[in-house]
Length: 430
Image 1 (tube, rainbow, N blue to C red):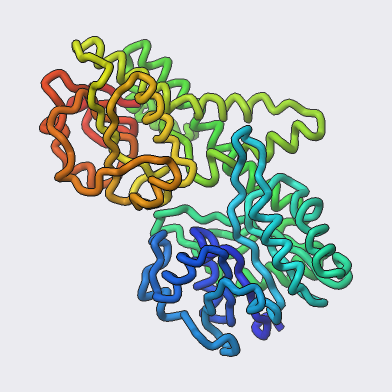
Image 2: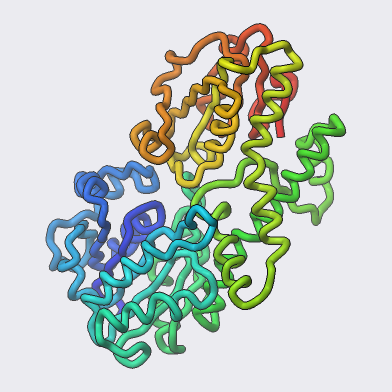
């Protein structure tokens, strides 16, 4: 019976922790992560990602690895030995050449391979290209365990659909795609997720179909955003407000609304490269996918360049000028800084020898320093009142409280990347 099985969730980040907490209400769940600081905080009931409320987290924590239900937090692989279901939720980044980096998946699979027993099921939630679970991960499990796939142990794939910072579409309220390596295991995996996912499940006919479904979800969004980003560049040359155009076009019943902007984060800015890489491996050049990525990756430098042009027109001296960038997280009202493309704006400004201040009340200064080598302004009272330009890069609600006209110089310009502010209060917006 499913209810008798102990579950291990590997990776307690934005995806793994909310999932582990929900399963812990009905099962004994071992939450495993290699980040000791993360483990220490979670044991105290503190989630710095803000995906799980601290009181909610504390309510499911247990220090008894033999209890019937609850979440047992650990970084000791030996605590995983008697689990029967392993769910891998580690990130799948890309390297400097935009090629898939399977290191987290490989390391996780090696860890699980050492504790795998007969009858166990290993379910992957990380975004990969079609075939990766069975071609990359399963052989590692077989090698580490000495067991035979689909005879001694089994696999499943159920792609994550977490939307960081979204308190409406939480893990149980988002329909879940499931799959398994045999029809019987597919049904067991589906029933497992059905036990916590109130929105329901969709059982895909194979692991490869489930993998492909996940990777095209974000690729589709990436391409649609690339289209409106290109429109924003065209309409800027034509002196037309892009937001007004989209609002007008949006009155048609079948118009799909997307907004221009920076495309970063752990999903949309990364996942299309996984599909593109697999396509190239089988001899197909994915033109539209890569064109969309190229367009979206160009937006940060474009914003900085357009800002500099406006500064020059207003008579500002560019070298040693002062610019304020508001926001460094990859999206609004969320502390997640992974793959934030705001860094592209900042780095482009620095090529002009511009002094850049960055303020973000949501981001961790320590994480930003480690990830990007930047020193954040920690408080709004550290902001100057003579900026030659202000770029509102992320639409945190806190920025609505700032008087940008008081912060900029007499000839300063304001570029509202997210169209958060009224058009007549800024100099430009995408």
